[in-house]
Length: 335
Image (cartoon, rainbow, N blue to C red; front, side, top):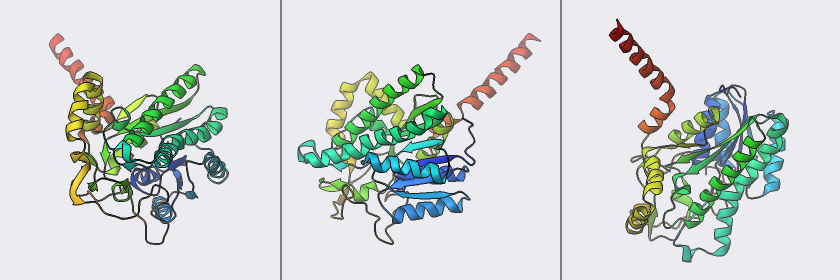
């Protein structure tokens, strides 16, 4: 598939807020028409407005990704109205911040249904249409927590680990078929999204992302890059993600001890917990004026750029320049 996104059809789940919202905007700025899937209404409407202001077509599809029939119906409508799906980005998730023993079975199941099976159903819907055409890209928005779990997020971490597992299996099946459909995972760091204002939390203090915190636009740029270069198995975004995943490979026992000591405090601010409604069972943008946008409440602490990701994006040009400089130097020495 061409790396140009102009005129392409892109589906983004969880597009009403957070990373999904930033991803939808990034693809629209690159020239893609974007189908926006999420449970809410006001956030989807605002996301559609952003896509259209970028000069592209938007299709709003209120969808619960934990329902495979809703996802497949949405995919069918996307192809009927926007054309064949070129890129499918799975982002939608939900979570519970609590020790494992304080999470109810139905809560745990629902996090798994959305955060894991939502990716499975989205991937199924995309593949059902991409495989006969032998073209397309599926991008799974993962997390460093899918490679290294932390306390207080057992349901979310388990789901993200599962996403990695099923995606690896699928990738080898596509390779066996010599398919030109590609699937890749973008492992994200902590991101400043609205989820920390509406996540179901049983913590004594207000939840927060584990610092360092990145702005959602950093994540969105990485997803767009992955869609253009999907042959790589995974992309790691942010120095903290690199350190976490490498640390897990080298010394998981050390991370166990470190997280047991710091994992509770690092996920809470000094402010007392709020009692605002959570979004586990119902979206938080059902009423007019409830658009939450891409950013959460940590703009004053969030990082807008990742030097690690900039180097990753520009590795090819940098290597070419370095190689050219080395060749010139060698030629000068030969003379």
